[in-house]
Image (cartoon, rainbow, N blue to C red; front, side, top):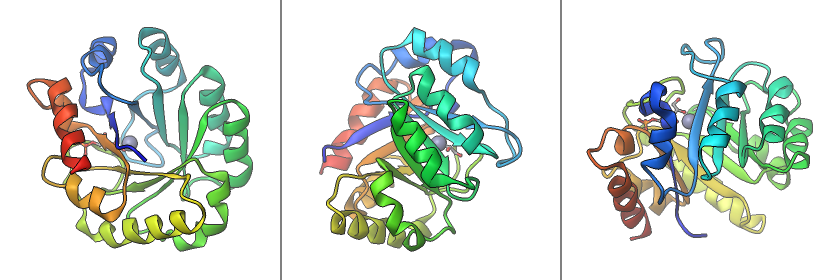
Length: 217
Ligand code: DX5
Ligand code: ZN
């Protein structure tokens, strides 16, 4: 699968989200971190902002729900028009049902694992998942240091995905930069979230191109 870059607007100016979207016309997705101050110790935005953003950009939204009770809220993000909706394994009590509801509403279904959550227990769910997200930091904040400890899990996830036909996209999120993206790509990731590495750069669009070039190497 071709490399895809998903800039995280968590590192952008929340008063200028439309401009943040317009700054990266070469991005494949815009990554939207929804945090509820319960599942993670940070609070960001929710459905009303996602709905506004959908009207403000044609770039598909990659909504990453770091919230408790995603089973209750995820389908609404898909119904609103998000291109992809990701729920956390640690928070969902009915992942099969929720992943199916996300797909039924027309979005890609995403399933996320925190750094310490193993991938093997979820092998049988791969058929329900369009994108597996492996967190490469503890979720909650942008600008954290990439956790090398996750690299072996990226390799094992890639092997499981390939064993099941290879359709599931493998996303990494957290500390992805010029310095770390090659290691992630080499381990088998193909969708790369980058917050600080894009919006902390002087020229966000150039940063997207540079990340893509490194991942494709
Ligand atoms: C962290 C979020 C990430 C965050 C990544 O909990 O899920 O999407 O924005 O930011 P960077 O790339 O700066 O680590
Ligand atoms: Zn995220």
